[in-house]
Length: 163
Image (cartoon, rainbow, N blue to C red; front, side, top):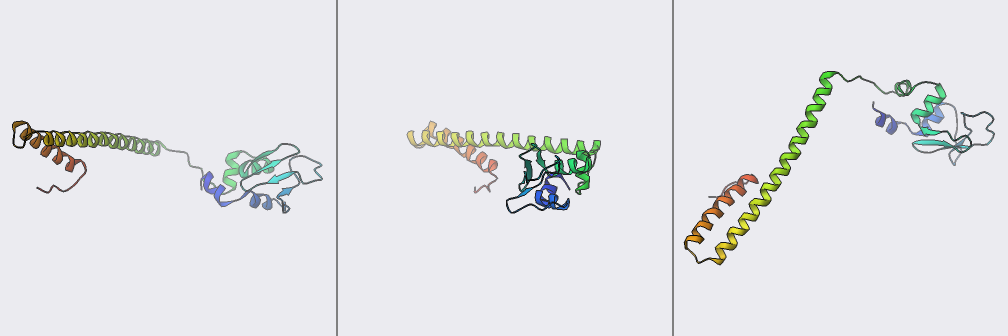
């Protein structure tokens, strides 16, 4: 399990109860980190804790670290986490997938720009055709260019050509 999966699995209340502390209905317990705590001064929240007397605070991992006097890695494994040192091949795979995502994002951006330019040219050619006399040289040139841009439009948007 990863850190986030462990945090989703266990609440702070579960961890505190695992060590024999019963929070009252407001969520307070006697702080285990400073001696002589007669009143409940540690507030237990859903994902973390805070002691109002000594200032101790943290999440489920830091609580287990302080209770067991262990490192984060040991607390992580104690709560069911699995630690795998990344190998060269796994890092290479991650790098390649990140690069592939970046390239796809760039390609989508370029394709979007091409679509915008194509639509702009279609609009320009249509407006010139409307302004010019039908079957004049300008009108025929615009008509041919418009047909070509409509073909490009169909290709860019992966539409079936209806010719």
